[in-house]
Image (cartoon, rainbow over all chains, first blue to last red; front, side):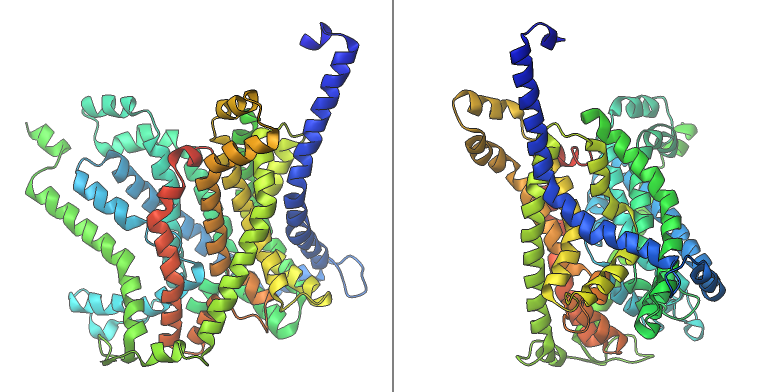
Length: 295
Length: 276
């Protein structure tokens, strides 16, 4: 609009300055993009190629057939574990964040706020070790259950199977989603909540009917990030339950370390990517949709 | 009256329910950690005894012995993490500034590229990069591990740095420019100090992520690079729970320390800008 009013020389100078600014921006972003391209996108592409390449370089689906032959059980098991963990994480996060937002006992809210975050930055490999001791037959969980009379000493058993993996995942990831969710809930406009409370709505209805619908996006982002992260965790299944049926990540490590079989490993990885793509599609759409208006 | 009492359970029973629930939750959080601490100080412990039969520091002396490999692993871990922070911030600070302050062509696409490493399972990447590194001689080297850690860590750093720069009030920059400061002087004396806490937070995030990273090091670092997480894993799989638990405690300290202070670095105004 303004360009039409100024002379051609000034417009050209403005255009040049604008192009210069854009180039500066690109130059500043380029090194970071280069690192991501070389050490993330390129190996990802190699994985996709390797999964479809026969030894003589021709296109083949044999690696996928072999993967499904050997590991269908583990693939199903992986999706089931990660899906169950995601659902449990959602329930725990909603319950804690909901109480932090709507709880009326100040001391209980403060205690809960202090408590829930402890596992937040604990790495998966340490969470694996922690649960390996806690859930073992001789672990603290069994001793407390026996001590309080809830469990017969003879019935004590190790929980180090698929349940152990789910427990480790929820213990580690629920605080992360809770942190995001509680942050989003805290920044909501309180007037609707207070209006509903004043009209006598119980807290769980305020949570489900007013608070949750407004923070759905944040919850989704947190859950999808957790889902994708858990799909490629190797340490937790290795430490808690490395025997079949187990998670595909363990099989990938086994194919490579024992057989040097990159083809089947890549095919398994690609199937996992497919699982993640379903979730990531949601996530990227949401994240980019949020990023655009600020541009 | 009764309906009010039903809608708002109050008084003694509600307080008791609340206390019991909080106690259960505290056990869920601290029980596993407590078990780890017990193992770290147990000299002898086997089924069915509920608590360790003997406590002691013998395993601690072994871990911290000058010839023990824990100190070496700790040194390797910290060195790799420091290099990762240096590399990540060197490329992430300019990128974060450009994303927050400059008009970029293909901005959506660039943001997408920086979301990718967080939104895609990392296993195929580690597996294939290990193979490439093996062919060009980077497998089993500190450089190789740092490159893998940085390609993941810089994404977090770009996000947080961009949020930190976006949270700086640009009228302050305009004032500095109007008073005659050059673009570089303005960035150095106004923008950078104001974004400082956010950048510090991103440095700590990258440091911790590198310190704790397992899968990438597992594939790329073998057999010569043993970081603390790998040492812990090997000890645990070898059945040495004491060494594994002591190493795990060493890894827990920075994580928990950061959890306790994170809000001092990441203010709400910066957090609100993440992903914008």
